[in-house]
Length: 42
Image (cartoon, one colour):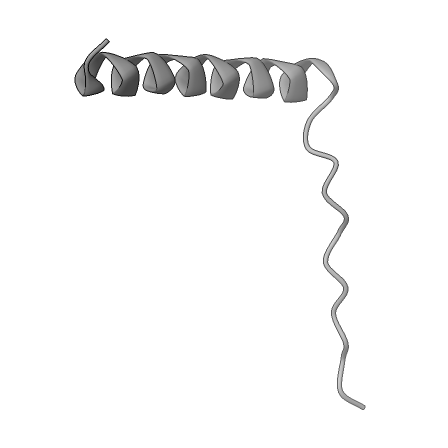
């Protein structure tokens, strides 16, 4: 394997993982981020 083939294999793997991650988030009902807490000055 030359360097270009290795890079392409890694890129393909990362692209697939990103797709899998997005599908998992969509199927679980969205992002689980906590709401931002704002501090109001008095």
